[in-house]
Image (cartoon, rainbow, N blue to C red; front, top):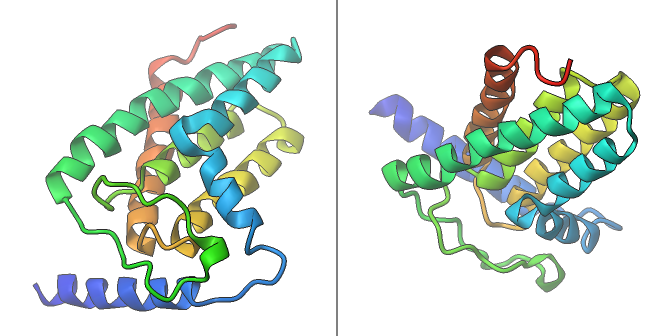
Length: 180
């Protein structure tokens, strides 16, 4: 129990540091990025753009990315949040321009982070670095945005991201010959 208590205190301190940070120029961008990832719309749009290129590796990456989200999202939203039921952090003290609609679901693990990491991992396993790196950076931005906007603790984001990465790797392992 002592380790759990220590982790909880660390998580709260990290949250306070990130949520309390002032990043000029990002105060409006980061919440918009977080909202763009609602319901995985950002990832679906990127998958559509990748598929529309007509290039086989990018179509494969898009398919795997969406399949990985289809695995990660129910794991965190229907299973993880029900098991852990963690209360979300307080938005008190956050600048108004950073506030987004507060989800009513449990905080742990982060569904946005799981979907972001699932998509980015699956894409990275198929696409060239010129595509995979910017998508990975975008996914990291979404993960960061969940703490910066005050709707998740860093531990929620980390757990979601790990789940998402595992989903991306699992899709690759279970469906190695997709679209060959």
